[in-house]
Image 1 (tube, rainbow, N blue to C red):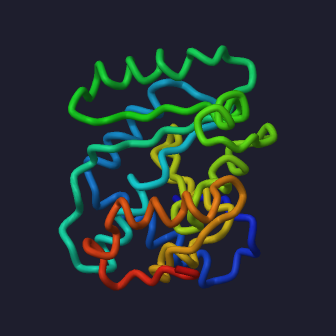
Image 2: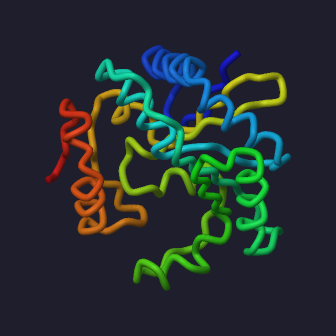
Image 3: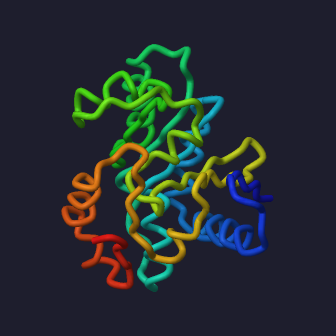
Length: 201
């Protein structure tokens, strides 16, 4: 069973991409293990996203063997938890899977620290999907949740078009153009996935 949480109309092409994404995830034991570990925290609104999901799709589309699940971004939304809860949850995950580099972020608190780190103040986010939808590239704005009955839920507020279209396109919701350019250059994505096209570069 696959539930598709996307803001665009549920056109057949969108549902096909969502099903393909879930199949790619299910074929990656490390990613499924990370999802199961995150589910074990009992968070109400969460997903694993960004590179942990995006890179597996790009590997699949390039015919590469799946890369190891070392960097795992877990995001959740809970305005009622204290800011230091991120560190507590990360410690719990590290205790279970110490070989993985867990990054745990409550999207409800991003506005409290984003300006101090990146120099640009941002308004409070209103939901998990809004947080995922504010990431620097549209292809990165994708997450997966594992439900209690082992179904995968896709969180893709900007659709999956850029992800499966191998497009690296700036999302201006939070990141500046300079930050976007520094990311794709510094991460050397084109060397690893040469079929990517950087839009606006």
